[in-house]
Length: 580
Image (cartoon, rainbow, N blue to C red):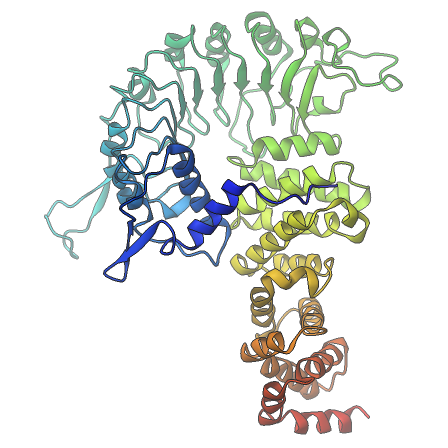
């Protein structure tokens, strides 16, 4: 069973401070601007957590409000020290990086920060003396600056975006780990990287380069190379084979991308095995195999799967000196063979491979993550999940990370329904089930797509109501009432939502009932009944609506008054007459 032990004191304190900045770390200046208390000094271990957890809260908790000057609290390294920060999505703007430019950052991960522009290039330069790890993944506007030929913006002088092509990593002497995934076209990658003396890890995902020979300047230091979705050719393969220090190589691609001409062969895999003797991790997911790389073994079907390279069902890997730690074979036919010389494999063959795929690809490869979630859904719908806690945590992470991706929200919420049913209840801690509820409510709030709404409502039905929803009581009621407000709502969602509303106002105290009544609960139920009466339909929606009105008015005078004021008694008599 998952642990029900409390969060660490650090986690609890960080969370409390972020939800109560004014009462803890800050005071309000001019009733609107936060300022750090004068007697506070916070080391990097605390400041890093404050910033990183703040970003997670803004992105994952729709009730948590972003404060425009939050990053200015960390502008002075004499009182707040930052070292390793991970920022993502649109909450981060140029002025936020500018606010922390005096910090001696060691690690800066910027993911899908599309509001960052070339104004931040100079700020980035201020981190150059100390920066070791940098990610600019998905920051598609980072090399664009605004230019106005006329000096002022109007109909005749519109502002336009101009690509900054002369920036390089000159002066970034300590930089070892760099992610440029989804770098905008037009930037000369070779010139950009040339000043870096000894790169250890480089990610060039989604970048199309005809010539990668410049990578050989780091052949004595480069340990990790990611070329995901790069259209490869024979010349690329020959260059890669020269990078003999590589321990991790990723040449995977999205198999649904039609423009890739390169086909993987036995010869290429042999070349990697022969030349890259330090390799412990290889990802070839999505590739089409041009020739047969498998070894036919008579005992394959009866043997226990083995990671021993000597027994490998994939011929080129029989020459490995040791099993790989990781092998990416998602959407590659090789994932179905019996003997794979790797401890962790991504693929579609079984639950283990699919969970490995979700774990490996969630952060940066949402299309592949969506397809892996869909396979997981098919598995848990039919079979018993053997790694329940891991599966739940991975689905929760995917839903948090991609809350606006329709496919992930649909498949992820569907998988949650099966992973939270009563069969698995004893294995799940209270904290884990609360995380599921929060991510379900986030999905309902962020995405109005019918299938997502239905999946989320069905998942909530797997919980003890109202007990397990008590900690989000107001929020869940508001969301359900919002679903029920449109009179032409999908019939199945309407039925589930009314059932949930009824359960939520049953066996709760009067304070809860009064609070829900003030949200418009009584009026919403009466409106549903009025619609059914007009259509001359007496069904579960009408039945649950009357039951909910009974529960919410029970011993609650204010709700009774609303019921009478909104002609509830008249409607009751009309229903009694129509459906005796």
